[in-house]
Amino acid sequence: MADYSRDCPEIVTQVPSAQKERYKSLRNLFIERFGSEPAFFTRAPGRVNLIGEHIDYCGYSVLPMAIQQDILIAAGPNSDQMLVFKNTNPEYRDFTSNIGDFKIDPTNPLWHNYILCGFRGIVEAECVSVPSGMNLLVDGTIPPSAGLSSSSALVCCGSLVTMHINGLEIPKRKLADICMRCEHYIGTQGGGMDQSICFLAETGTAKWIQFNPIRATNVSLPPGVAFVISNSCVELQKAATSHFNIRVVECRLATQVLAKSKGLDWKQFKVLAKLQEALAVSLEEMLDNVENVLHPEPYSKKEICEILGVSEEELNKESLSQNTLEVTSFKLHDRAKHVFGEANRVMKFKEICDQAPSDAAIQLGELMSDSHTSCRDLYQCSCEHLDQLVELCRLSGSLGSRLTGAGWGGCAVSMVPSEIVDDFISKVQAGYYAANPKLQCRVKESLFATEPGNGANIFEMT
Ligand code: ADP
Ligand code: MG
Image 1 (cartoon, rainbow, N blue to C red):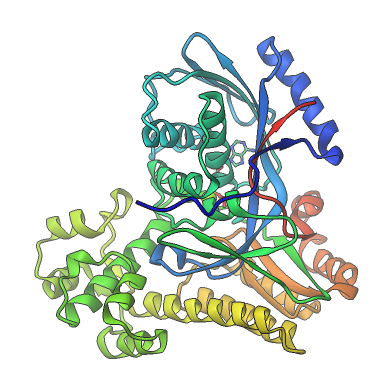
Image 2 (spheres, rainbow, N blue to C red):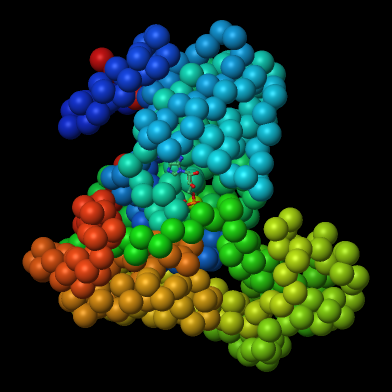
């Protein structure tokens, strides 16, 4: 059993004064839509990952911070056992269902499914036999499908609503754990970074997040730098495509082929960090293992079956996900090489922040840029527009820039000397957004400096 006792920032607080107007208008809209007052609000932030991409689901630590953009839900109970979800954005259609009568459909991941993940996660984890009906009005400011984790903010916000409406109190670390698992109902087999930072973030600090069990440690970023997010505006909805799960599966297969080569019972190993732990060797030695055992050319499914000594049917069951069953070719060498290299960069990043040498910002910037190169070349999770944007950010004066989040589009994050942030933003605006009217009209919400924000909360109006 995980020990959650070393928790936790206060979860129920008052609405910050700067935000009161937004809460008031959401309250008024709730009254308009539901004909009653909301009982409370829940808020869950998006996040930007500074370093450690695609390694949380391999068991390795990551280094994100929460951003100001969020999902905000006004909530009230209903007595007719209904789940009624509405959204301030008309693109997201109303959803209504009886409480015991909904399906989370991974083949059609409409927005309300993410809230249902949070609902189901809490109900199952806490064995709630007769959950309360819920009227919800959702208002989101996180650019969707852009690598800033709007999906997990929805899941986490939905879980908080469910917890509070049913009179439960659950520590934030346990909520992170529940949400990490229940987002899998939508089909993406992610790790726990997004849900962990969503709950455990604190204003003014980035967090070093470790897994098994989830832990969050403050990280002091160097003075004199700012983090600027730039959205390529290429969207990838993770649950609607197999890009993400293919990488998860490639890492799982790399783990199992490496485990088999070491004479271990490969079925016991699903993630690279567990294999490293069993072999009791360093990340550098794991990189040597990659070079010695795995070939750079893609593996066919047949070859993997032969190496592991299983039928295709058994491999499907042991190692693949529902939406990767048709994939026939897997890159194991490059994916594993990225994971071990990136895990190493996270450790170095944390060490530099802790030791704070005089050239800390320069060293951190280099690690961020190396991370992007590895994502682009080894993990192949970037895309042309995002690569161009990252390059432009570097030429515009960043100390380091990289894609952030799952990739294949979405955002870049840049570490920029504070005194040139305005100049940096003008240059990136001119170089990426200005030439294209479709991008130019979205520049305000697509290109901005950000600071480490607070984690998820429940708010009561006073
Ligand atoms: P990311 O987590 O990187 O933002 P995902 O593809 O994982 O991207 O999740 C994006 C999905 O989350 C959207 O397709 C939509 O279903 C849902 N979503 C995001 N923001 C909102 C919002 N404000 N209201 C309703 N649903 C939202
Ligand atoms: Mg997501």
